[in-house]
Image (cartoon, rainbow, N blue to C red; front, side, top):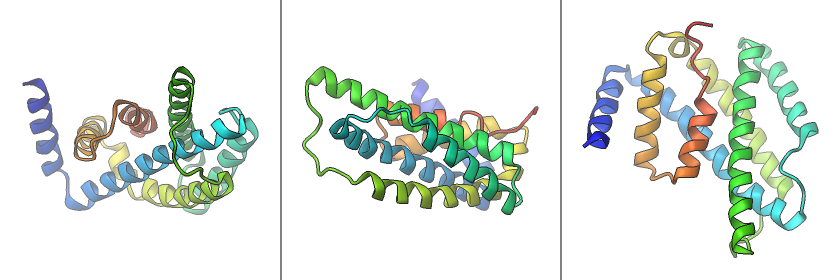
Length: 183
């Protein structure tokens, strides 16, 4: 019953959004979910290579690049860096959880192995798309109802795309601080 009420509430909030804002929120959700899904492939690569999940040098380079790109797009560099730090943490959450599950099982899934360099190219492409969408959602992120609208859209997106618990949690982690209300 609660789930049904939550779904009805999320649909009501979504209907209250303008179609453009709803599309931008959904686009942002899709991009963050895509980035998190790449974490599955990165985890496979790291399982095979034995490399650690934490790559402080790569993370610092990504955040520095995001700051530069944000300024070029008229976005606040701190806001963009904070958003991308959340994306990095969400992606690491996926990797750590999958690696742990595979260790317990004693093996990783028998899937084609990704090339880490190719994955990074995809992550870099997503960076630009996420920055552009972040810029388009600036008014929403400052709106008083931002937390409830984003939460409702997140729940609706996760349900519609049948995200498992891990990827739903990663999506929430990636969008946890997106609203700038009260900052």
